[in-house]
Image (tube, rainbow, N blue to C red; front, side, top):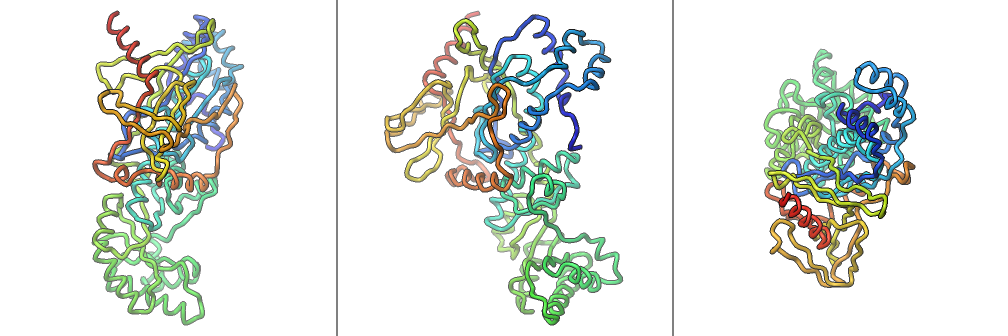
Length: 484
């Protein structure tokens, strides 16, 4: 799969529109924005992820002869257009918010400036990559937060919607703060820690539970976590684990990275009882880990109940984002270059649904931080050529309820431009950090959020406002459209 050609990873209408542009000799340069409209999982923010895979896709965007033959066989593409595809190369610019960043609705996570045929083709692949990884990263950051500093291991591969979802979902979960994954291929591809214990089948394949534990301990004395709930957790599993730990200690083995795993039953009750048994037996540093269809709500509840668990294995609910299975990112035309003036003409999409009205123009995002605390105040979407001085007073307002205004005194805030150049004139100018580096960056990013924004339910909304100039352009376009 690693050598799979992704050029045809697109919707048919992207190609039929491309042919339409080709036939009409349309070579105009345009701006497209990739953004989303609401935070997934009821969260107060999302985590951007997937940019490295977007870069790989753009770099390798070539139509092979097999691709051309397949498209010709559909009977809807002309030979001249197919000849154009043979020489196709992406020659535009791409700007994006770095992976691991905290992001909010309506702001461009990625911006494409390119000839319209090129910008149109890349829509579907960009969306499927960003939508999936940003969704899983956002779900995973909630799970990691619920664990309150305990380690969270991702092990949802067998429940993911296919191999790619399992591999790249593991990548996104690592970005969000997981300490490891059970997915060996993800470990190899992204150089992240792989972790795991054993299954119930290991226990059941031996004559008895004690023999199974003993053999496992002999094989992995430095990573001995025993699954204790195959038969009877408290009457059999934990006592047999203690017996093996005692024998390991008696034989001179230094016990480290050892403990038990609970995978069923009342995890709060079982963990407290198991902790007492382990402590009384002289193993206070034995780790109690838990699995069993965990999500952020169950982990948070177990922590509140005083469960004696310090390591969490999370699978299905995280790798599938089970309660919110789609991110909802979209890709919309925002501007067209006037070749005579060299200026971008703003474009807007109208809708009966206010939430679907787009923000026009060639834009950038400025993040406003409180200078003293370093926390995020708001994001300001403005035109790409606008400049602001953090030493001067700044007033922002809600673009829908314009009477809601916030004033920042000059010198009390800092500004950061969020979109960074990734491709310029078709050449990649960005080096992706490693997944573990992105993970550290993501942690720093979430630290810039106020606690109220990180609530699991009814989080405080971070404002995403429009600059005065952008708001005036949008209002003018809306008024013009309303008169036509």
